[in-house]
Length: 461
Image 1 (cartoon, rainbow, N blue to C red):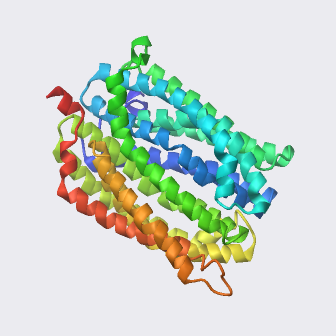
Image 2 (spheres, helix red, strand yellow; image 1 turned 30 degrees about the horizontal axis):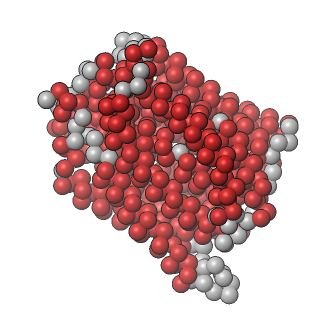
Image 3 (cartoon, one colour; image 1 turned 45 degrees about the vertical axis):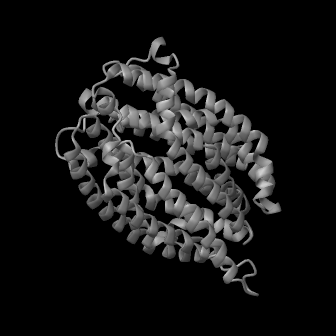
């Protein structure tokens, strides 16, 4: 039982088998995570209307922007945890987890305050249509009140995965997802709470999952010990954690800022395009799940093997990960392209929205294979301790390529029929940026500088 549910050592055995065994629970977990937002959107779209669905969708770029601090903490902690686990450094591992728990608490309070104070200003800045403005602000207020639950779940589940345990976070997420569905239906249908009901269901469910993850960590005393000493803040450790996590956090901040700018452009096309956009992003989330799952698996696999000094396994595992990731992504892309309309009908029955959404999915389809390459190779580099290279690639693809390209193409396609431009440019620019990002990632991976970034090995040298 302990072998099945406990932390997994991926420094031995077939790399392909290790990756598959670790990724399957992770993939199911990402599916459940996607169901959080998908169920919210389905319930709102069917029982409240297209306008409410657009309001929820218009809120996400701001939420993602304010989550960047947690992304940095989670990335830094995940790298250190996986490498210390691979190096069998229990004291350093325990101290890393304890400090991460304390940092997450204070950062949650800070983000909650900032979010509540700035959300209306941001929604005005983004030119949110008047018919969905108030609903968007209500949704955001409630989500920020529950930010601590979301932060702790994402960070603590990331720590568990760094220890090789992808199964227990999955079980906790499935429990939370089931609770979210029940609360969604109860708050929206029985209590007629609208978008507020969806927001309350989300934060309550995430709080439950975060408590379960903390409980799991506290019981893993054969791997680490979270005591008063582990919770005492260590300046050098925190600097190291932020040094590793800052590039990923900055990368996510860049991505979120670009998303805000694109959301501002999207809002100029009107509520129908906003609604189609949020539906496509829900379907897109399922297409992206294998990419993100294999990318996270590669981070843990690379981290453990770099910590153990097994660079030969890192290279072999990366090749296996690419083969698996590309095959799975190709199958999912075919399914979504040909059957995506049936998925979108869960959200709305408006034919014009469905047709626009299908056209957007066709435009995005080549980019999914490119993202499989990007996520897997970036996962390897991050696991080895090189978080800077993926950050620069993200900076180039989102700020220098995608966002200016979207605005330029929108300007060039303005017409009497589409005074703000052709809405297809929103996704054409995204697909182009994904393909170029994959090419850059391959180039930097092959240069091999990421192989010299190991943390645990350098400290023991």
